[in-house]
Image 1 (tube, helix red, strand yellow):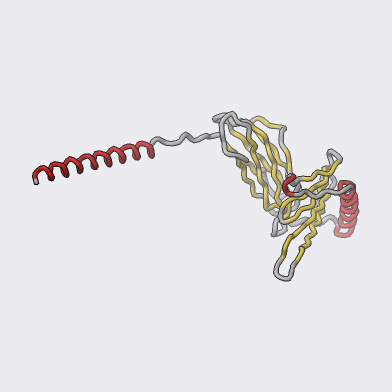
Image 2: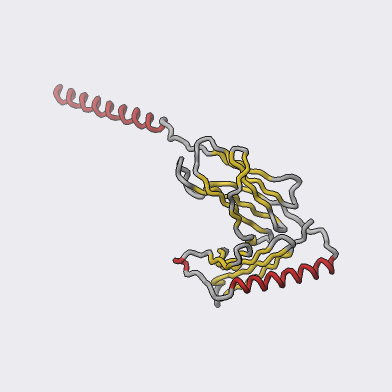
Length: 233
């Protein structure tokens, strides 16, 4: 089993009455994985992309994103420290069996569904420990290569969550699936999602129409008898 070391640090800016902001940093490493991310109030501020060799600021412009020269290089140094700690841990603890938590997976569309309008499918995997997880997609039982993984994010209970996103254009009847592999699973966990655009039912419109018609007939009948009654007087 692959041993994975994750370090999670948390700091809070405290006033005399309450916690104002809570920031956190996550650094993880293994023989195949590297992860370094900084966030605040549950949102990611920036992370190091070790594949592209650059730092990535993830907040939009209106949120006043934080950046500074050398934050990618800082991420590289954090990974070197993580790998040194991993080597020490393996030697000291003789590669022990890690406690594991099974992931929970859900799949949904980012935006309201419209046929032939580009959208994004999101596969949310949460509640797992330790990282990493492997996520793969299929469309109509055919494997897809287009997917994007977010950084690992900590949950309050010490487990982690991650998102995989897939751009797609909905076509009626298409079936997508998201498959998750994790060390705690006896077999891969798969969730499916089918393109199904519901057409509004005619029932409510029919009932409204009938009700309106009966109401108008009632008013007409009442007016008729009122006039007849006045004439009798």
